[in-house]
Image (cartoon, rainbow, N blue to C red):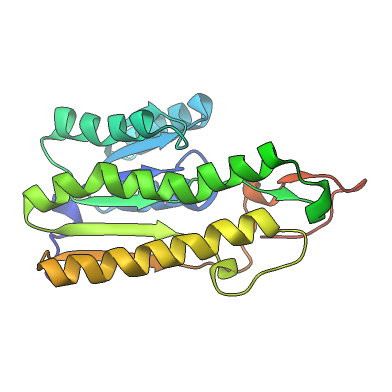
Amino acid sequence: MNLKPISQQVVAVVGASSGIGRDTALQFAEKGAKVIVAARSKAGLATLVEEIGQQGGDAIAIPADVSDFNQVNAIADRAIEQFGRLDTWVHLAATSIFAPFDQVTPEEFKRVIEVNLLGQVYGAMAALPHLKREGGGALIHISSMEARRSLPYQSAYSSSKHGITGFLDALRLELKHEGYPISVTNIMPGVINTPFSMVRTKFEQILDLKL
């Protein structure tokens, strides 16, 4: 599969205000890509766009909650409006709750699924029409090692990450069957020291667990 050089790409990075997402956006911008950065944190996005600009890059920010399809779709629409196309979609917005399963409420479990799994689904839904129109591109989804191996006290998070794997495996086969030159990548990081490590917890003390 032949993808455009990064310097010629328009790239959306969703979940870009901190951690892996922020560094990913900076790396794409450093290599010459035009970057659309999205997350819930307006402050984090503002400093990221400023940093990219100071390095001579080109970036715009869009605050968005990935559990809302309309907000996710607006990210792709803004890419087209601002830069005329979309080549790569990187999605890693996530949340979690660290607690025994019988202490997790239905609303808390639902929120993790909506952000982690449906957010990734919505990202693909928003990006794919534009990638198909361009004749190719890349979907890059950042998941977790928990997509393969679950951990205790992470029932909602593990469920969402296993769901991402099933979704992306099916989508990859579908695009291959239909003949679209669109890559679908599922990246599963292990132990990463990022701000996401401080997830919501129902234990009396925050455990030094890096997820």
